[in-house]
Amino acid sequence: MQQHAGSARDMGEAGHAPTAPGAGDPTHVTFPGGAVHGTSTVLAVVPVDGRTAVITGQTPFHPVDHTWPDHPADRGSITVAGRRHPVVDCLIGAVEAGGPGTGTLRAGSDIPVRRDAEGWRWLVLHMVEDFEPAAVGEPCELTVDAPHRHALSAGHTACHLASLALNEAVAGRWRKETAADVAGVPDFDGAALVTSRIHPYGSRDTYRLGKSLRRKGFTTEGLAEELPRIAEQVTARIEEWIARDVPVRIVAEGPGVTDRRWMCVGEGEGALRFACGGTHAASTGRLGAASVTFVLSEDGAQLVMETTVRQPDGAAPNS
Image (cartoon, rainbow, N blue to C red; front, side, top):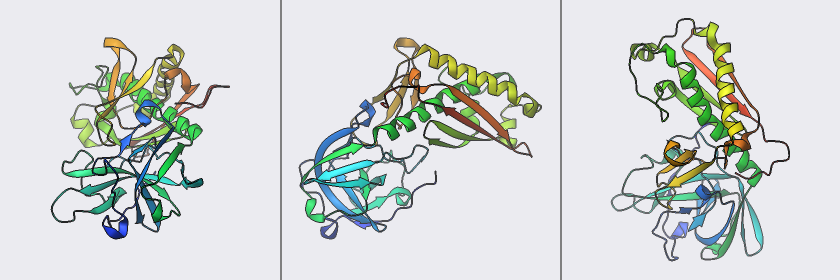
């Protein structure tokens, strides 16, 4: 998925600046707890790139991250005064607090800072095709497309499990000590990952196998011949997690959209904890059967891992 384009918009009178209680706070999100429905108040209605961004005080929608846009946005609808408005995209928005540009809303890739930057108010922008500015201050109902959410959540959970399994499968290729992953295994994924894209029931991860990685001690000789064995081992490891039906949950530092969040796999002291802002399946057992394939570029400089899972027959489409 490509990163979203964005542009600056004035949050002053023309943009219907928020006036409701809590309007100076970041958008509070409920998706970390698995919510797909909620109610709130429309705080602002702002034009962005020919569409309309609707800002609410609270939302169950997961927006795409402008810094690392691996996980696509939720889709669904906002209903105000009985009228349903499809949400066609969901972005991160930011307004600088104080100094030049105060009151200017920046959306998506137009945001000039990372999501943890201080001095900015962070918002969720529900992108709709048409929305009445007069709706500011009105109560609204927010509904996420639950089957689509589950499909992306399953894909994201499988992506993390695949990265751990890949680290295990290639651990013997390290000639030097290197940083470890959350399971204590040499972190090939962390050292070589270039891009990661989540899609319904799967993911695509691209790794760079260049001189920098080799200088760190990773051996690439004979990798092409070994890939079938690695694919089998990674798939088997994911299937093991699925068979164990390990619980998965999201832990957040706070309710704001940019507050740090972690994906936790397992319980107690043995739980694996990833820094992650996306949504996930409620347990590994919700992923169904897994399949992992690899493609190595002709020059051996790039490795692509495709991970696919499927929803178990008859399973409810809940995260």
